[in-house]
Amino acid sequence: MIELVQECGGKVLVGDSPGVGNLRAVARRTGMLAVIEETGAELAEFSAVRPVKGGGIFKQFEVAVPYLEADRVINLPKLKTHEMMTLTCGVKNLFGVIVGAAKPAWHLRAGDDRELFARMLLELYLVRPPDLTIVDAIVAMEGDGPGSGDPRPVGLLLAGNNPVAIDLIAGEIAGIPRQLLFVERQAQKLGLPGSDRQEIALAGVPLEEIAVPPFRLPPIADVQFGLPRFLKSRLRNQLTTRPVVVAEKCRLCRICVNACPPGAMKVHNDRVEVDYRHCIRCFCCRELCPEAALEVKKGLLLRLLEQLKKTSR
Ligand code: SF4
Ligand code: SF4
Image 1 (cartoon, helix red, strand yellow):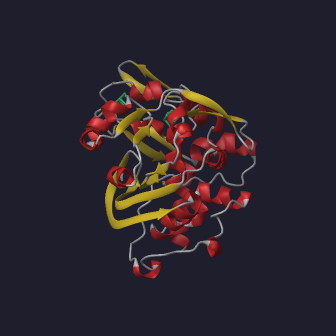
Image 2 (tube, helix red, strand yellow):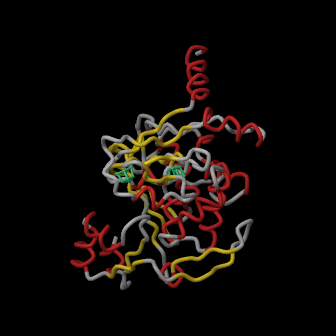
Image 3 (cartoon, helix red, strand yellow):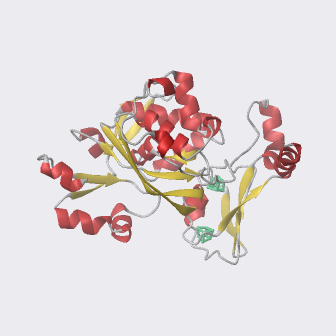
């Protein structure tokens, strides 16, 4: 991508804001830094922010300055499953323009309401839509993504100028029911361009020729939809999945403790403990744990309901 933009006379900044650590360290570890240095592009650590008015229920976002000031933005997501949002792709990738430490605050504002978090992601995307989105689905990720999933070779690049439309098609390729695509559900509710499947014009390999077996999904499924709020809060532990620390794998690095948006984690007696009354099920802890030391446990009622579903088939 850097070379293609340079061929067109563009000066390339490669920017992001990782949830933990600094961009230079992450870029070095992933191999991005070597490419950036070799091609003469510039690494743009997102740190300075500028307040930008939101156009919906979120009135203001603090957005990374290089993202706002770039003449053109090329959004480069990877196709991955996501324990909170089911799928992370074009729209969710733009959460990277929220600078590191501010990310947990946004998680906290949405709490465990995935619809609200999806709405926030869409309103953030609308603040400054990228000019082009290219999804790397050459090797995608399935299962316990985005932190502990398994590689899934797909062999595709998806490109377009509307990340909502791209994500809808990506979900279709991955065999994920739209009901589980929170961003797409919200986009449809808001009537955003790209959310109407009939209006998406496709080019390239016909979808019916792309034989990708359905992705294995993360165990995020909860059955809180439609429940009244008072029941939701009472049955929350039974009806949802939750993160559980595997003590044997945990090296007590405290990355999860420091990143947990509501501060629901602490180290006590040389173990990481989670206070589930405050846990918002964002699964940032799992995403960031370098030891894959957090597992997902399903609540009792959730397991029972799933069992019932299986036996009634
Ligand atoms: S991030 Fe992982 S290894 Fe580090 S304290 Fe948390 S659970 Fe343990
Ligand atoms: S414990 Fe994990 S899932 Fe729960 S709020 Fe903290 S980071 Fe999110």
